[in-house]
Image 1: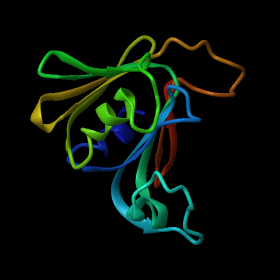
Image 2 (image 1 turned 60 degrees about the vertical axis):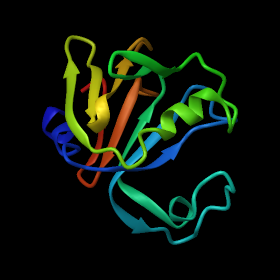
Image 3 (image 1 turned 30 degrees about the horizontal axis):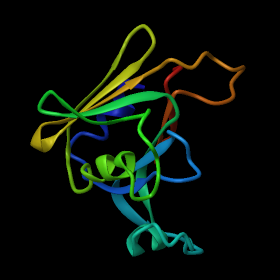
Length: 149
């Protein structure tokens, strides 16, 4: 797991999936852009997000907090309207590069540091559910990497 997480270092976040209908779940896309066979029709996504998928996709389903230089930008508890504070806060990660990433034992809470002082903390607070669902999952070209590994 740690080796796969290290693959994100230096990668730029160019895709963000969050908003109405997703609750506090969101995705961040990093790395190369791969052309989709069938473009998405979601009008809340940018054209490049509708036409391409990311090489690396981080999906977060648990509690989380985004900070910039020690001040909270947004959290999993904010309203998730498409123009609301959660989406606007996460949008601040667009074009930011991953400088540091670490899973903290024993639960594999995740910390990701980006340029411009942004830090994303992911708190693994969902219990194991017989192999279904995870606190976070990173899709990589080598396959999925999840919090329970």
